[in-house]
Length: 521
Image (tube, rainbow, N blue to C red; front, side):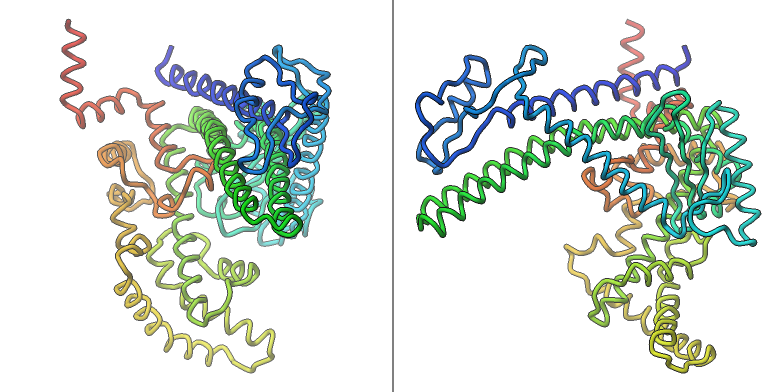
């Protein structure tokens, strides 16, 4: 069996294990919150009959009277009707789980309706039904998209029911397929126009194949199923917080017992801490499963179009995101000069439209940010206040203002305190590895040997990222996708295991010598 096949089987197995652990931990939390009751009054003795199982022992241990003004006990009104794995589950809990599933489906339907009814979301296949029809000048782009999706879908034997393009200056793509059942499945594929503008045809095919892998693996359905118990626990935890908060307010304004109110506030803090820790531990397995779903989709795409093509597509997508992030940070700073609130979504959208569609240089984004910011500001003044400013006057004013703004920006970075240095462009660059250093012919594409050198540098400097915006990512905020560094290394490791091992051995000669000695022995 090929090395890359062994690697992908490990990823599949790891994903299954992470999903299973997530469900087990979530199930345990559901059982505990279903059986525990918090009351303000001393429960009657006939109600205080904890069971002899482990949960009863835990409840009995928690049943301390008069400390926080709460009595923690088994809910006396529970009537268990269901048994799962030998554990009695309250009937109300089962009902609430079904209601939560229904609520999750309604929320999903609501979000899908919002996304697909957006005026910039255009259905191009089989016919334009959603949003406005595409403009005549977009016809070549639409035809190319349909041709590429059709070509890839035939190769992988997955029929795409509808294809959409989303007019957006940020590159992205996603698929949706909630009923992976023959004769009922209706997979949708959405490509942002910017993906089609910055990538080559092969690289676009890599993106399409990645999304069709999600369809093949039924990832939309898996994520929906995984989201239901999370929503259930969030609702139950919210109820617990409100219940304790009610006790605090009762002690403050009804009983006028400030000491009890303070104890209950402490109790609320302890409960929040315990539940936050439990949630954090649980969702880490969910995040790991989401990351592995992306690795599996990358493997599928690389198998179809080639690993080097996929790596280059990831680099270009990340680099475009880098330029857009740099632009966004500059716009935020420019807005702050007038002590305004954050710019409106429509203002930002117009700014992004002014930004060159194929620009990949973050330094250039920082340089032109003042110009396009002022251009949009003048456009607003002319449109909203009927101010007569001809194009020549606007251009003259902008040309005179831009140099002073760039100078002011440089002075701002020079005066930053040490603890704020992490937002300086120079500091950010020092924490990243610029892939363009390895592009010897400046073709914006890394060839095989260039990729090898790039990977070797990544492995030699594990504390550095590929792009600046990855430095601001956190597991909690970016749980659906692993970083570009991890995805690039993972693709290379799966498809070039020998070269990857050679690089690692060169970086760790002592470890290699030890392994060689063990092999000889």
